[in-house]
Image 1 (cartoon, one colour):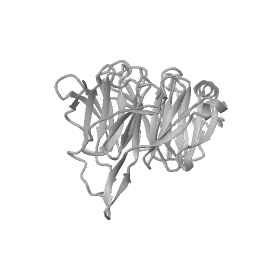
Image 2 (image 1 turned 180 degrees about the vertical axis):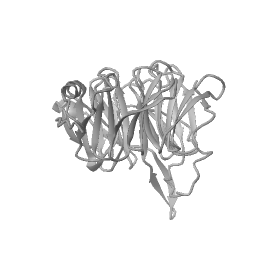
Image 3 (image 1 turned 90 degrees about the horizontal axis):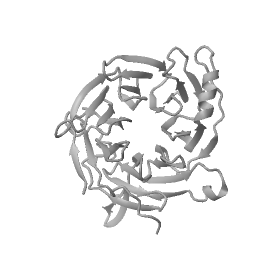
Image 4 (image 1 turned 60 degrees about the horizontal axis):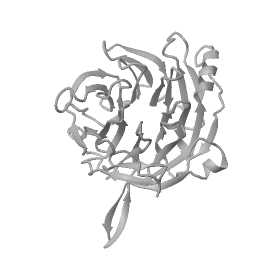
Amino acid sequence: MSNQVELSDPPTDAISAVRFAPGSSTRLLVSSWDHHVYLYDTHAQPGGALIRKYEHRAPVLDVCFGAEDEVAFSAGLDWDVRRLDLETGEQTVLSSHEAGVKSVVYSKASGLLISASWDSTLHIHSPSTPTKTPCTVPLPSKPFSLSLSSSKLVVAMASRALHIYDLTALEMLSAQSSQPPPNTLEVEPWQRRESSLKFMTRAVACMPDDAGYASSSIEGRVAVEWFDPSTTSQARKYAFKCHRQPSTNDGGMVDVVYPVNALAFHPIHGTFASGGGDGVVALWDGVAKRRIRQYQRYSASVAALAFSNDGKYLAVASCPGFEDGKEDLEARGQTKIYIRELGETEARGKGSK
């Protein structure tokens, strides 16, 4: 039987990301449009405890942990990529893009920190050698989402473009590149793909077994694909409709279609969660092509999701997403973070039909 707690002291504006620490299932980072990053102990007391807030100059669009639980990296509309010392609160700017920075991810395996900006570039940082100039990788389109597996980086972009980079190649090429800024690195992706989804990509998430990824769109669909370029593997890819709510229109029933804002894979079972503008979180078995379960609808749009590294907890961020056109809706008081404790078999796949 699962249960859920709502964290106290949530952000005062929309949430952009939630991330559990690599070494702790009770340490949670949250980035928000209210110009802050929040660090919580989710189980310090009923409702959790806010450990610290880290103020930024502009809305924060993404956050991730580094190699240790005491280091984080943030990115946002101040165009900067920052290193946060979570113990002291000290902030260090690692690089500055020429537009807002949408995503930031850290690969423990390669030691690389990668940021993606609306200036249509990636910055490749080596946090262990802060004196090294970050490399700039040009992209063909504006990036919307990043995700890492143990060996791959997936970049989902505008115009339904998708690049898959080999992390080992990125690590090697960036280590050899030592030009003055912008230190441009013309690196060929391991694969270039066109999204299986017809509408704009909202989120992408890599499978924990390094076999492939899922992506979602603004038009209530999720696609599941595999990295292996063989014809057999590519024949397995598929897409499905989700996050649609029936509504009565002129006496007839129609589907109201919502964006799928968030995707997260369970680190143990390899199943995944999706969160939509309809306020629903669902669990899916991507291999068996089956929905495992759907949770009771939240009071607002689901903006972000994350599983803890041990797979025992699911963090759900809920806040107004303006899907209903009420753009004057106040996010303060409606932004909520829930921690759901998962039963032992709750996120386990059902097996093929």
